[in-house]
Length: 58
Image 1 (spheres, rainbow, N blue to C red):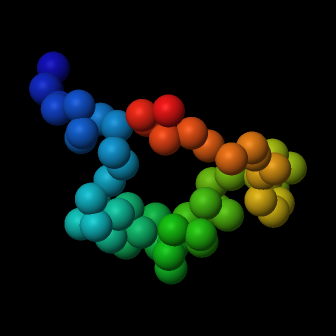
Image 2 (cartoon, rainbow, N blue to C red):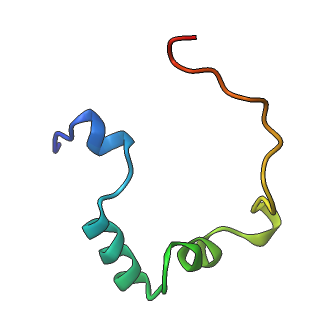
């Protein structure tokens, strides 16, 4: 099994990886890729109504 560091597992793809995903999938950009892979019936439309966040210190 390959070992991946914490940041590789949790911080998302690099620009190079994202470009490869888009090229492989034929998507024009990340929004296009999302629209092609996430059913519209479960895709959130608009912003979430969230309370103001706390800083790590708080």
